[in-house]
Amino acid sequence: DDARESGDLWWYEEGCAGMQPTGESTMIETKHEDHIHDVQWDYYARRLATASSDRTVKVWKVEGESEYSLSATLTGHDGPVWEVGWAHPSWGTVLASCSYDGSVLVYREDSPGRWSVAHKWSGSACSINSIEWAPVEHGVLMLACASSDGHFSVIAHSAETNAWSCHRHAASALGCNAVSWAPVGVKADDVLRLATGTCDNLVKVWRAAIPEAGLKAVAAGAAQLAFETEPVVDGRVHKEWVRDVAFAPFNGVPVALLASCSEDKTVYVWSRAADDQPWTPKLVHKFDHPVWRVSWSVTGNILAVSSGDDDVSLWKENLAGDAWAKLDKPED
Image 1: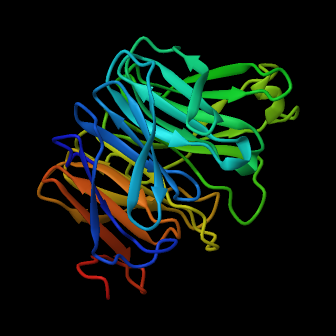
Image 2 (image 1 turned 60 degrees about the vertical axis):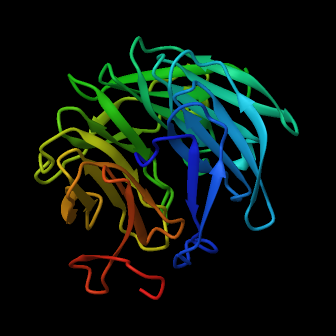
């Protein structure tokens, strides 16, 4: 993620649906005029969104196997754009972005290549560092945001009123760098769950009971969300700022996995045996440079790690479940 000293983007092919990497790469001349901070595929992996310090978001259409054409350049931010995120296609073609200017923009594609701003949220006076859409199974269009004022926010859209509500919660006395929603598992859950990574070196997992009136009432502003932390074992394993957190997608195994990375050069994966047990960290690797981003494959069994030496490495847990190994070649 921090291997981004220009407007060029290198894309490494993984094959289909999280299969082993092929080792092939494609360079895209993005026409961004400054550093690229984030790249995200849409649900079908047919479109790509890029976020840059040039204050724009670019949307790319994938044609064939390796042809990329610029579909749109989205504007509206007054500062560097840190992250972008596609909503599930059941909500239409919706893309969100967050920026140093303290705002979140929600774009909607009205017709092919023509976008409009459906909503602008400026509820923080500080940089918005991270965003992520809630799982579609919750039935409401909701976006979590992490900001440098130490809060995370959940903004939700009401389909009935076409209005947006905001629910803000303090995560840290310092800044909040990252946020990630937990997937909906094998059984319907009556709670919302997300994780944050903060500047006080902490990883926290939060839960909020879904109000009796339901999430549609939350989106309409008629009900509130009350988040509280879940217990963790040794919550201070990181010694520097936590830069990213990422829940693994649900892959049929009833054990949730949460990855975290830090400027202390470490990556941990957190898990718990049951809902009434604390989250327990396991070291994946101690790197030689600060680690900026972590991301899971769509199958939830391969972890990608982006570090400060301009390197992206792939990691997989062994069959015994007691160690993580780096994938050095496709046949691994």
